[in-house]
Image (cartoon, rainbow, N blue to C red):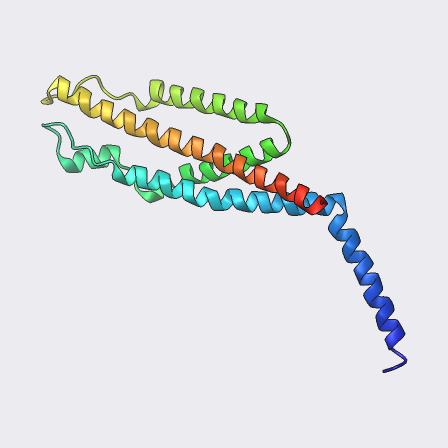
Length: 184
């Protein structure tokens, strides 16, 4: 065992030098900080996801007179399964915002937001098209019901988008601060 002591000391010295090199190498610092920021963005994303889900569940608008509760729910309430692709898009958006901000390319965030608004607009103009009236339903009551529904959709859209931007900004801020902490 006494013969191995110098060899063990040499191995420990090499590992210490390697650890110091790895800890302070720019690639490792960037990688650790990036990963920590991305993980925080993901954790905050869980809160955004929950907030949007709660906003969706809180919507209890009653159907206008002449429309049954069942018909109303079938037309305007989507199941969790039907909303799954929307949630996936939210996660991709959140991580896309994180990467764009981390890279110092906020124009990518602005471009995505412009695309998102334009596609939402086109969707409502050409695909969703709420009818102007329903047989047997008072026009004013129908207008109120569609106004409440549109307001609900807009609120969910804005809560999710703003939540994603904030989650990414906080994640990037945390990651960049971590780099500075590791450097000092």
